[in-house]
Image 1: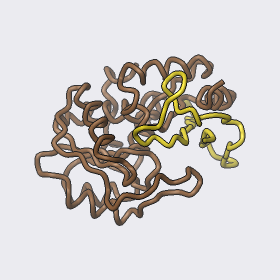
Image 2 (image 1 turned 30 degrees about the vertical axis):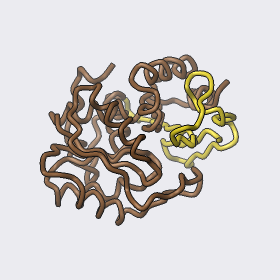
Image 3 (image 1 turned 30 degrees about the horizontal axis):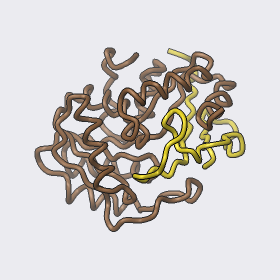
Image 4 (image 1 turned 135 degrees about the vertical axis):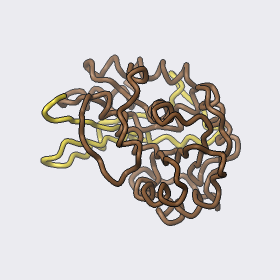
Length: 53
Length: 200
């Protein structure tokens, strides 16, 4: 068991309503740059990163 | 790179034991084969850190709970067609889906930074009034609704385990990471170890 467990999450801000076309790899075409929405909690072990739609 | 690949590469710079790809609907949309391809693809950028998705976490949770008949509750921007994709996903994994519904009235899918489109109270009332007695466990699918706070109350009322997309993802990630931590008040699932066969 690790002394401290760090887990992060990322989410796809995908508007996945039926009929939305998907791009390469089956991902929504609007799923793009992930670098602009990184939120961290100082001192904590969690990070939530949302890919930008 | 695509968004999730790029995001995974960024997160992989951190000292992590697991990365949750919080996208239940993606599993529904892609199906098991597509989901596995997606995970394999983004894991090319994860520096060896396992990438876990919510729907497989729910599958592991149900198997750990030995629940075979399940109810699926979805967000209010789901449609009947998309509900059925969820049914097909879990049927493919051997579960009998005895109920599926999405919260009503329908709402537009929210922007990811605006938070939940439905209140915990609305989720609680919908689940309590729609889950049939035949369901052995419940999955509140979709990561973008604030469902985690209603788990304990629903389990008290329904006398059955209640999983939510984010809760079960965290449970699964902790188990994959080998973290023996005690988590209270977020569902009876947290009192159980994951079945080893469910950890890849």
